[in-house]
Length: 350
Ligand SMILES: CC(=O)SCCNC(=O)CCNC(=O)[C@H](O)C(C)(C)COP(=O)(O)OP(=O)(O)OC[C@H]1O[C@@H](n2cnc3c(N)ncnc32)[C@H](O)[C@@H]1OP(=O)(O)O
Ligand SMILES: N[C@@H](CCO)C(=O)O
Image 1: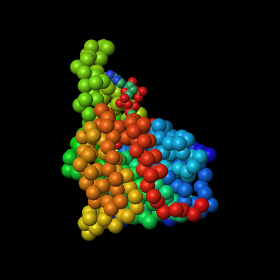
Image 2: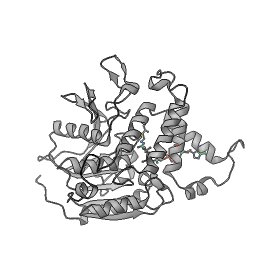
Image 3: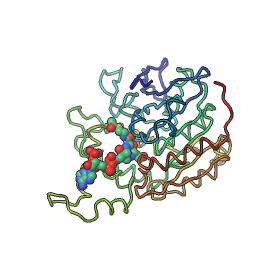
Image 4: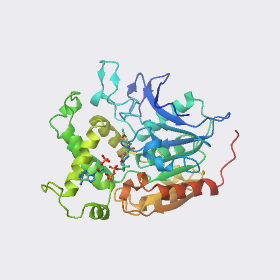
């Protein structure tokens, strides 16, 4: 049964990798299905940058009987990322020291911080094993760190990301943050609730939407056609619309903090080497690339699969670019269900 979004207050303060404390950490999550007696029939889904806990909506095509995520068979859980604005502690949460939203006083966080917060929730829920951890993009970075930082995952699926955020991806991220910082309403990150930096966040999303898709996608959808009013190309109208759509549902400082966390992604950071850290992950993994992904090109997933001892690399063919993992559900289902059914995993008690 799905109880909607649940908000859990952790028992202890949370201290980030950078040493800053969040005194009253909140973790929002949703679950589907029933936990077995051994509390280990868990499928953990990690969401992408602007995602939320509603896996049944944004991964809807992977959800249901016989598909990747089947609540009749599994206990599915999705946890809102630390720093996001959908229920877990983040820049829009109340800072207990001031009684006002943290805004930019919310600490800089890393992908590892996100995973540690999730670990604490699963500890408090007394989850003993994770049959599969899955994520795309920022979700894939978390899924990978889960496998490195915790011995509960028994298998994993990583989509559209690599062993570290590349300079190319960091550059695109940086440019988006500059768009936000240059909005006069940004006010050094202390903007008022009624005057958020909408133009900056919208521009950031437009830049992102170019990196998330492909030239062929835009050619097919828009060509050089004008919008009905004739004042602009269809692609301009589309990007304006996508920018507005995000500002209506997302927070600017969350965007900054989450994109910085993605830039921090590097599994060898403060660890001996890529080979050393990834070479010891002996659980079965599936690494999925998207042939038109401009942001995280397939070479990154191929390299990740080569570094993981029990990995198989598969590719989605799509015109949609990076966002294909949120759209090409038939291919995603085929690849992941084959991986689940064909890959031997240690038998779990139930
Ligand atoms: C609270 C929440 O809703 S969180 C939702 C969860 N979100 C996430 O997990 C983030 C991941 N999701 C995503 O990034 C996206 O939703 C995706 C990738 C799955 C799909 O992207 P979409 O924007 O829906 O698809 P697409 O690129 O085809 O754009 C369609 C939209 O553009 C609009 N559009 C298309 N052409 C034009 C145009 N020429 N001018 C203006 N608008 C246009 C369509 O009308 C449609 O609008 P709608 O979203 O209001 O229905
Ligand atoms: N489209 C995704 C980001 C791409 O991984 C999102 O908005 O979260």
